Image 1: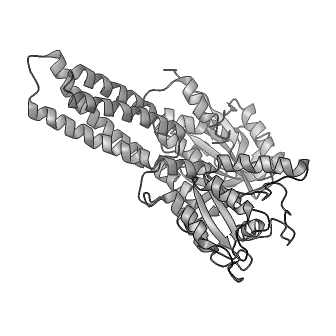
Image 2: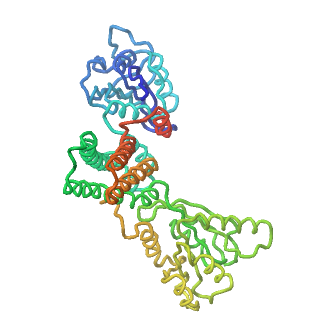
Length: 470
């Protein structure tokens, strides 16, 4: 395990680039307060090193503070600021932390940061404040990664899942299972070391029962992992159908704004159009495809190729029909291609007289959703259907542990595989050495999830995704 140097003091701008009302320069480390003493002049003539923890003070950042005096109105002011002190160990990093709330202009923030760096601290690496919170033991690795999930959340459900992980819900479940495995392993290793003390049949049944209980916990977590991926990355939804069935009108209705040009001329959309929307708390990348079956020129040929590419990679397809017309050869082509895919069959233009052969569609897709994109009728039913596809009646974001991080999912899968192997060894009455080894391997993966064991490369990969100020 790499021994990280936590003795130096780091600083960075912790707010996004651009103009804003407030921008924050954050300092963390043993010299944070002494650095603040050198550059901050408070209105009440006190130095930051004398401030109580969790207090905020008004004053100025100046480049030439007189060492032994407090000038209530210093010269060479860089910015008028609010300075907050958070003393170790009750801070984000468990170190002394100073946050300087400046005006949010790029020049003011940069000048304050440059002045801080001149006093002897260094620029923080990406995610280094959160890395220090982990290395100093304030949070485990799952909680540290949850910070990034919260920052990058694309919808409310993803935000809630991130907050629950930061709170420690997943960590508690993993730690509880880990403690259970350690107890089982201690029994098995005692028997391996002292084989004359044979484990009774009743005790072996109890070990099997406890392993199955842990196995079920991991199964439940993994069952929700697909939903976690969707919360993190979103779901790809493609609107397809022949020309002039109302695909662009449907996109506009879902977006609740005019995004696509809508005309009565078939083939108006000659290329794919992509947008991100939020449907029932689910981040959705929705694509409106060209409805052309036979290309008339090079442009339409390219449009067809793109549409096919999007349909192949789609998580869900909305196949749209014009209810005011009979099914065409082009409609039947789409039905044949998509009947075995995750497809929602939708009949549009229900505000007009129906002529479509509805039975052919229901025979292939089981049910249809009737809408009028132009009149905004039943769009909510289509949104409900998209949400039902994601939730599938199996998971509630408010009640379940949702794993959104791919690293966690892969480690949980590996640990679960070894727990299952241990159970199979017990069922087949194999030597308990095999059972013990699988439990040890499962524990290694669980330790990696929590950060009880890690490598420098692993931490570098994780925290390199963070912004510098976090």
